[in-house]
Image: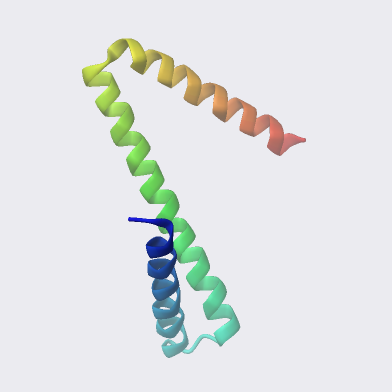
Length: 86
């Protein structure tokens, strides 16, 4: 799927979610923010599932790379936490 198709799908999802929230009685401006947050959360969950699956696959098929990958993930987390503190 190319980036243009992904953008189109996201725009349709945003419009559908906004319409759903408005139909539930939420003001349109709030519905927009709620829809964006919902899509963002779903995207985070997808990325988490992808990473979990990849790490599991590495563990089973490439144990030497798996150990390095875990170290890299931990280093990335540590760097991110440092940036947040600053």
